[in-house]
Image 1 (cartoon, rainbow, N blue to C red):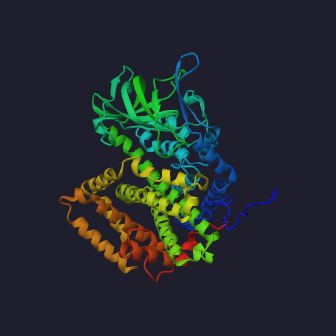
Image 2: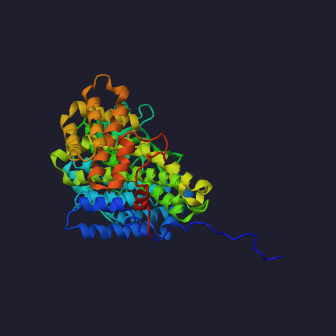
Image 3: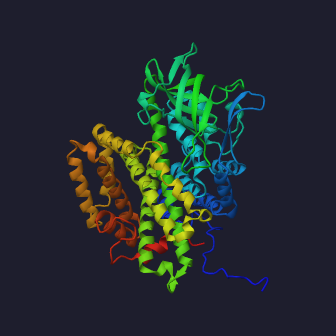
Length: 545
């Protein structure tokens, strides 16, 4: 009969929308409370909750879809044939980036508890749309490098910390806020930046140069300025390259093409050429790697935070789906095998959040002990957390079944994004070798990490045994390069375990120590041992709204 429906839609979970992404994440809320002082805690929670409500809104989720479905386009010339080298973005991307800037995600260095509140915000914001987080990260991370030059820091830092987003390309001195990008990698060298061939020719004016060369990967090419490495007469040196010169003329910044990436589709990554490009030196000639390492360390922490955010969103979607979907006579979340999978994923997510926020708190402390801790813990955390992101995202998508393989679910976008942070800012081997370098050259870094781990001594026998195994690995550094990944993995797991034993609910710490440190775990998710309170672990991860 005409008009008769052929089917009725039932047993479908409601969209995970209209909720506070921050307050729905118990592990994150507890970490923020743990590392913020009582004088600012209420302010910080209100600030992050406002950002969380925006992140969970239908409007911003729609913007995220639009920004990814219509990626940036390169315009090398205007209609008259003039070279302009501009990147065009969908309006939704500008709205998202503007919201991130206004939320203070580029201004951590001078605010009370600035790094913790900014790290939590970054973790929340990644869950909306990770592509716009790249310029936020680069701008935030440029500050420690600029501080190598007091004059440059005084000029640029207020612009970088501004909560006003101004997308127009004009002299930075005429703008209320500015964004930074970075260019280090070249075709012939990759991660071996000392092999860079871009040349820097000194000009008569002290500290100024002309650059000639290329960058195979330039982050955020629509930015107002860039930190780049080039070969000056004294060796590899760090430079600030403004996009527009003070007189309003465009600096020579030739965008040859945008990268066609697996994920991170809304964000522009470019290949650029310098051909007589004006630059200002930052730091001393020949000290470029040392000068820019502060930026690299900060972006590496953002990689860990970004992966933690992606994992949290993947787990939230999986748990939400299974809490509403029925199969075989009951809710999926109540089925023992699915509960095991969800709990396993939740452990990975919470451990990542705990470690990433601990590192942010070390930045806020700023003391010598905490700086030493960061030297070893940042590359270890970056290595391990980013490595865990892809398998978590894939398994979470599988929890939704065929629905998780469909674009409208949002899970495919998380899956495509999930490998990115393990590659950005130095892939796994680079991080592992950096840990070895710190072990050999900076004994204080190991002492600081062991002090942190030691605060949990005696709280769990599996953690204590894992620490002893780590000592065994550390006792023999001869020929260690071939097993560097094994060492770094153990270090990261022990750091995570020590934090969860001290701060997480007992059911979370017990399950983590049994599986990750006690070895009672299979090769895939959903292989946690019997005797654990998995229902409590899953309920803690549920994004109630």
